[in-house]
Length: 186
Ligand code: ADP
Image (cartoon, rainbow, N blue to C red; front, side, top):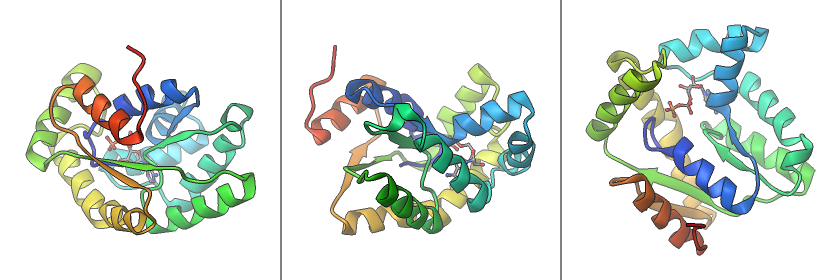
């Protein structure tokens, strides 16, 4: 977990590689559907371009299908999900059914001004439609309103790992691996 631009996607790939499990990014799945212009992509695009969350029913179904894929059977890492309390409950239900359990929730903290700068830079490199200053600020607001409260939920469950997201990518990876108590592969 972490606000937009915290580095979730980047770090998710390292963690998933280490554990040899798929990194499942709801944002990436939505973007792939948008570029293929599928019905799901058409639905999601309206929300994403405005910096709003895609409705829970749509997102939940998509995640349910994805974690049913055979490659997720040994385990999986979710990037960008759950983002609302309703998604937390839905995920609890899904994994109860598949026999999985949540081992850890990693929260990456970076302050808002640094984030806007990182995202504007990413906009120049990747050209994502939702990386304009106005939409970035909206995404931050929604994160603070709807997603930040989930940090307390997982803290109370005793599975929250909080990591400082400032500094170089490899420094953040090292902090995450230290907290998860694993040794990075070079
Ligand atoms: P970021 O965290 O940098 O904003 P993501 O790639 O994770 O980027 O998500 C991009 C967009 O995809 C979000 O702003 C939202 O519109 C949509 N999205 C991704 N995950 C979810 C989710 N779990 N629930 C609702 N909408 C989501």
